Length: 211
Length: 211
Length: 211
Image: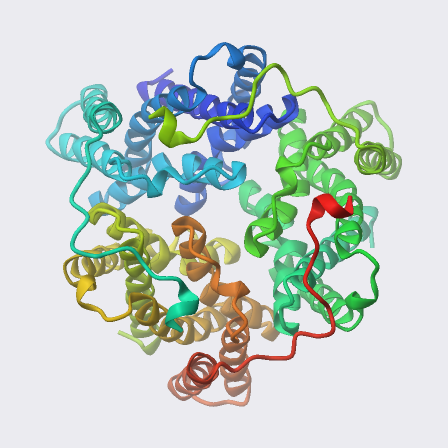
């Protein structure tokens, strides 16, 4: 099993856990846990494979991913009420998943196309798409619109991995570097409330007042 | 025309009707009815085909599906105000579509991969995705988050069909059994308010109070 | 560079600008601008390519599209506060993008399948999907649900282009005709509040009062 395979399993498992935590926050039944865990766990990678034309997608070729998602859903159905704060657990697990998945997505994009720009984007998209889907489906306020740095962390990890790979580092070193950098950026944002400047624009008015 | 073809047309038509009913609830114009009818009718099957790599997707190969969706949209534009409760009609038609489509999705997943786990998931996803998309686009509260059993019904139908097929039943018998079981579960949930236990977890707090 | 290539770049750039304007209305950071600009700019074309099975999708084959999106995001990050009304700019740019993209989508659908019905739908879907995605991700009220004509404009442009092509007009004339007609319909709706009749249906009740 290669480094990328391990990363993929790890990313799927922690994203699945964030989906199950959303299900817990919405007080769904056990199938709701499994459903949101699966969608969140496999959503980002599914988008990546579809965009790159690598179909059937990864979990159709290897159903172990689905078994992981379902197991995570069941475990959290039985245990999530013991957590002090499910939302805090959700965002920290999401940070781990995002760090693993931006490297994963960049690696697949780079190996499929050779283009660093594409690698940046597949890394960014696949790391954030699972969480976006989870928030949309569970009716949670989107993590995209929160002030703390989010997409930037995925972009950082993708960029570091891509540059390190182009610089000739071996896969395992480039992956580790990318993951650590992404996690530092997102973890710092969560811990210390890091933000980037938002420009001079004020909030938008109601469409009905404008048109 | 095979059993699966008929199922597919039927599933598309009733899902299209639920989309048109959402358009009616939102007081859209006739193109809005046709648009939401089409998206809801073909959404689940499109996701299924894209995931399995069976592209171009089914309605590109056979535009009759689109004609069905558009016709359903027009018919409901002319008649939906006569319904006593459009939402009740919507959820019951959705129940029929879900029952047909979980079997359809499981059948395609099973024949494409031979894996029962994949069949379960393609059945569950394609039966629920049209309705999820409809609720997202129409700004309706998601049927996923309602307490009554929903995803579970799709999973039941997929599981029954898959097990019956593996047990050697002919396609038509396995399909009928899957559809009936899915409909009993979802119909019972609608009629009698069936729910599964939701575990010990309480509702989630506001993210701003937690982070 | 062909007419269709130019249309594609133009459509991507103006849709990217509408995404960046949404980011501005939500006071996101510069990466948020680039992210929403990219998703909105490439979303419709990505769906089109995935449905037609033309993968890897267009921006993986030609990363120039991504460079355009990112540049538009940066430009609007620096300048959007100077706009009198960002929402008005957003909907007018969206009208231009929609006009370019319905022709683009219809052209690709027609050349891939030869079916006018498919061309209508790929035109309609790909012209509206970027905006739908933008509104969903940015938590804006969906442009789909506003009373003014929207989807109808995309359908008009797709239909005019398709009919003109079938009637034997050269690509450039059919494209121009489709774009102009779509823009007249959408522009008129924005300027004069054009609507289509909404039928006799009243607004929907709350699901909880019905079930």
